[in-house]
Amino acid sequence: MSIPTFTLSRTGDKIPAVGFGSGTKHKFEKLNKPEYNMQTVNPNLVTIFTNAIDNGFRHMDTAEAYLTRVDVGQAIKDSGVDRSKLWVTDKYDQGWIINGKLYRSNTPSGPYESLKKGLKHMNLEYVDLFLIHGPYFLKATCHVTVEHAWRQMEALLEEGLVRNIGVSNFDVPLLQKVLKMCKYKPQVNQIEYHLYLQEEKIVDFCRENDILVEGFAPLTPLFADKVGEDAPLNPIVKELSGKYHVEPNHLLLRWVYQSGVLPITTSSNVERMRSTFKMFDFEIEPEDFERLKKIGQSFHYRGFFRDYFEKE
Ligand SMILES: NC(=O)C1=CN([C@@H]2O[C@H](COP(=O)(O)OP(=O)(O)OC[C@H]3O[C@@H](n4cnc5c(N)ncnc54)[C@H](OP(=O)(O)O)[C@@H]3O)[C@@H](O)[C@H]2O)C=CC1
Ligand SMILES: O=C1Nc2ccccc2C1=O
Image 1 (cartoon, rainbow, N blue to C red):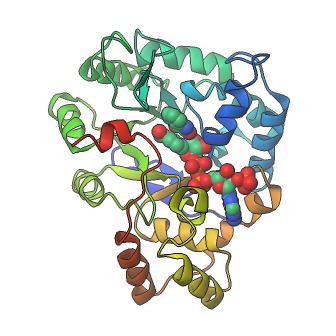
Image 2 (image 1 turned 30 degrees about the vertical axis):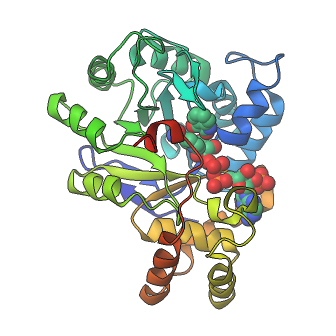
């Protein structure tokens, strides 16, 4: 099975067009178990990530903040897949404010030291993509400004320890700040993106600047605990899943992909992992694509980083 790719503008590197996340539920599987930490593997997670690779994923998404670097590294080793055939994305933990609570960075000195640690924990010589994870550059979270952090990202690039650099959860003003001072532009911005959060301003800005958008939480419209029982897409998702003979998750992933955004999804379920790639076996017709888009725009839902993005 060959997975479609997106091409990054500066290097021409080809990134598999769907990624497997080791954050969200897996992050909590690590954080909530005091017997594990960022240096010790959780065998359950290694099994899940190895299953993902065994069942076709070639793009793994991890982060310092997830504590799952070591589990992803072990899964890569256990899978036996050649390193050159896998895409690995990692992220620098600059610290957070979530629901008003402050979380300090794991590496306040910045991305340089973070990545060095990460390579050790993953047992890798390089990562394909390294991102600044979030927009929270406060004295209380880390010791670098976003500009200092970006210089460190560029140093990692020049040393060959990372093949591409980018950001995550950056809005337009923060992207502009980096573009103004950078030697190498961000290649990627990973943001929350789904039918109920289409982020047109950020996506258009990224497109104009050759920055690939990756979308996390692409399946959000499926979850009644997030969007409610009567969310407006429910009937059309049912109708079109029937029309295209796919499951609702395939339709949602396909919509993200067809909109030019690379979805980062995850699962612990082997059957769901295996069937994810059905998203590449059909095409949503333009009229259906637009109907989904329009109905999606009639409702707003953001699951992550409301403190930052919904402050005004
Ligand atoms: N940069 C950032 O700040 C962030 C990055 N991320 C990255 O994105 C990744 C994915 O994020 P996430 O929000 O989990 O993505 P998704 O929207 O893909 O949701 C994944 C969840 O959906 C469930 N699921 C999958 N398929 C189905 C289905 N057919 N029906 C019902 N439930 C289903 C999975 O559970 P099950 O195991 O039961 O299949 C899993 O818990 C993260 O792991 C992380 O790597 C996420 C958040 C923030
Ligand atoms: O996957 C993630 N879950 C999170 C929760 C809080 C902050 C960042 C993240 C992720 O990147």
